[in-house]
Image (tube, rainbow, N blue to C red):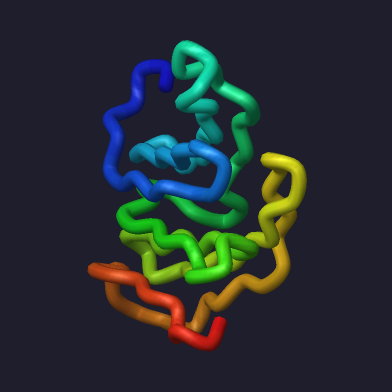
Length: 102
């Protein structure tokens, strides 16, 4: 991560680590290959991303921001693609969790 501070981490499948900081960029890291950064994705519509989590099956990643926006991404080939954006929250996201069934 560049100059931003890390605000949340999540472990994915196949020894991947996802990190996000206050600059709202999600980094995908390969922990098997000397901590190589595989991808950097802008967390759309978010500023100061506060929390992140991965679904139990590892197919989705959710981020939440200080402004209340929640983004849900599909994970495919170490790339994130935005699936849904929830913008009707009015308070900061303090925690995220997927339902066990996905």
